[in-house]
Length: 387
Image (cartoon, rainbow, N blue to C red):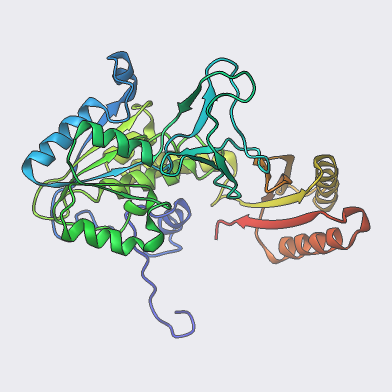
């Protein structure tokens, strides 16, 4: 566009915080569309408190509010989309007597139970093994903890016997998600259950109900974009309802119904979400107010990785000693410390993504790789930029 002097148009119902900040500060020209292109109303959204479901003796995955709306849709011959951002049957198995949890031998992560093939699988390295009949530690009974799309599918079949259900996740979409979506539309399958694949870009006239089974899954993770990603997911998936002539409805199930992010998504209020999030970004020195360089050191021996990461920290502190802006944080274990038998420690450089900083980090990576003391170790750098 710059070369040909063309105009670049960026469009989104949920622009990134950096993009919105650039528009608010005159870096981009801003144009706001307050209505849908077809002038239809936005869906009516109900926030359902899962804590009350548990108090009422309903520990299932489909709350009473969502069950009622699904029943209404089935009676009217309309279609529904259900969203859960976790595939598999259960998050993990747990021994009810000793607390043993089967973990991946190559990663510091619990294995996920998949009922379709009766196996435990690691979603990081692909390791799998059969489900143990009893606890290998004490012989106790293994219980299923957490939930995934396979488990939701089983509960839907129990609640609505004989109802067509189409599951769309990484386990079922190997043949192409377009094929599944074409079936959903052509055969008018009553319920589409899926992960992030069902949240954006779908436009089905007969879909009048969207259900978010657990809005909290992506909200409380260790990443500065957690709130933004959750708001975007919820807003986008709720917008799949009522694309035709009928008014859409949505049910958001959550354990924290008063959370501002969930309330803003339920009200489709991007402006309010942006105002709160931009204040937090400024306080935390996150993009767009600073750039975050993540430097990761990995290797087979944890002690060597940690020592090398501490050495990288000292180099960074020496480079930026006395500078008022940049800040060096860490090292700290990665959210998943070990993947495929390699330990990972991270450092965070809070600063400005300019040529000087990039050159310094590039030189640091080359010096690290060329040092004999770092033989067998790997270093990498990535940047969450404000530009």
